Amino acid sequence: MKIRTIETFILRVPLGEKRFYSSQAAFPERSSFLVKITTEGGLVGWGEGGQYGPPEPPATCVERVLAPQLIGRRADEPVRIFEDLYAFSRDFGQKGTYIEALSAIDIALWDLWGKSLGKPVHALMGGAFRSAVPAYGTGCYYPDHYRDTERMLRELGEEARGYRAAGMMAIKLKIGLVPIALDAERLAVVRNAIGPDVALMVDANHAYTSASAIRMGRALERHDVLWFEEPVPPEDRQGYRRVRDAIDVPVAGGECEYTRFGFRDLLLGECIDIAQPDLCCSGGFTEWTKILALTSSFGVLTLPHVWGSGVAVAAALQAIAVAPPIPFTAAGVPLQNEPMIEYDRTHNPLRDDLLTEKFSLVEGALTIPTGPGLGITVDEKKLARWVVTTPDR
Ligand SMILES: [Mg+2]
Image 1 (cartoon, rainbow, N blue to C red):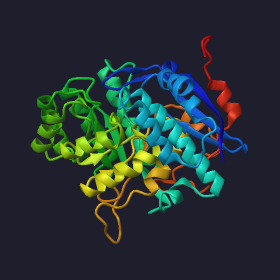
Image 2: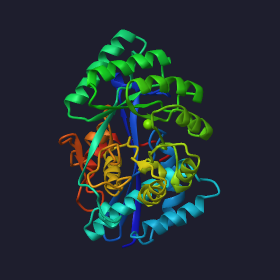
Image 3: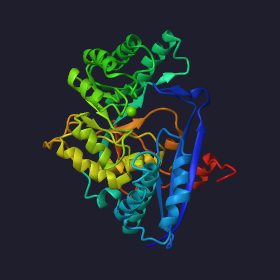
């Protein structure tokens, strides 16, 4: 089973009036970078690389640098290929673009390997702990009209009530774009809308200094918030520790971290209670299994960060299937010792319409696909609608 071709796809969907803000930026569009690897026998594997950043750098990295090294190699050796390519790019690509490109290749190779054996990726990684996983809704971003406070707060309450009505047992609110007092008001609106039984998490996307994060943390304590995600910039390890020591809310992070080496440092630095590697950034399934080994040895619950297309959602579902309860109990409790899957609820046709299959919530949970590989089918006719071609590609 040798690799014959590696194709890359940059997908873009403008959001128009649906654009929204996190603490860091406006989102005027959704984009994804996909890789399609085909073997000499005609088997096809799909992978995705990157998350918030522009898709062109990892695409170029695959096209110009990595793909030429892989044509003709065995496709059923994803771990070895990852190690070879990581060693090749170590001196210049330990984080960022190269690892995003490697992640896309790795996910596609595991998909291919599973398809060649007729088994889902979670079976190749050693077996699933669960067949479905409760989902938490990521939403409650800032609208384009966030300066119209009254309207923003009214719509926020309506959005949060909608998630509760859809059966979600947990939702995540974005914070950090506006002053702490107004975010505390937003928090109260959401808590009132969902009631005491739905779990509430917040994500600052590293908007604060540790001192500001601790001030925000006091408001989080009052509203029984389950975790405080990315309170400070990812490089500020000492800030993470200060926040974690000062407040009675667990600290989550890791979506901007790469490979087992990055997570080793987060763990040794005692920065996080919950680790959130993104499969499409941190090194695909190959690094996921190694990050899991590290986090489980530190007693840290590990939940994939998920932001991309349907391919990214499928990869995260395969990955979360093999995450053990931490610690083990006879009957796991979601978000206590059992993982949940992040389920982005913002508008994104690349997530909802790219695949032949549909992800849907059943009693608040997503089913883990059991078909070969990732267990999904990319609809290439639909994909063609969103592919961007530029003169130099
Ligand atoms: Mg986040």
